[in-house]
Length: 334
Image (cartoon, rainbow, N blue to C red; front, top):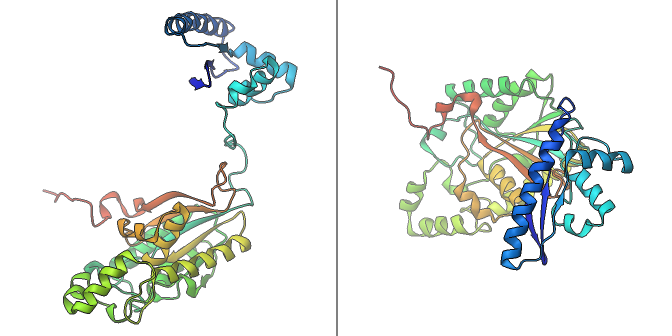
């Protein structure tokens, strides 16, 4: 790896050390490095660039381990320690990670954050027509019931601490099979309910725009202004505030665990936008299919660089089949 540092060129050559490798491997490696060193020196000298070169071979790394008590196999952290010994610390500060990756053999779920499996409810009656359901309590379709069973089967191998759900029927019917498969009871939380759409509930976007000039103007404003609410409904900003409050409570209650939240498009988009630190209007560019899942780690230590949250998966529907998503093209069997 070559990195440009102030007034210097640093070439750090490293190779993974296999305990079963032959003794000749380090010697071959060092010979190659010396050839690279000569070539780099010639190039840099010809261009008048100040040059410095440090070759960190497997043998040198092992020597650093023996003299400095470094554990584990050679890598950037061993190079970092070797740099302290050779006086090249200032060069390696620019190359090493501030927060080294957590070992795969270590605990995958530190107690400092919460893992969320965010599920959109399965297909309800008005979903195929892309109607605004809001607080309307439509049941699942026959397809939706199948989706809920498939979702529960996919979650069977997971270690879940709890299953929380919106109290609306379509969400409860999606959450129940997941909870039953894990011997849990569903926990309804009204903060996970869909945004109330007021007088627009049950209507499609085109129907709202054609309803009246006031409705059309209000809908256009609602699409670009998170603080704007449908007539008699709830703004996306208000949805975001309540769903974040819910997740923060769960992060304290289930620290270090994994929980399922079964909710709706509005609250789930609000969480995704919050985790990615983007405006709520970004949600207009996200499509969340029925019965799909998102995975999010919520907490300051979810990742080594201390982000408040990290999104690991979005709109996964593998449990339903690759072509089950309505946006996937299909070929009819001959």
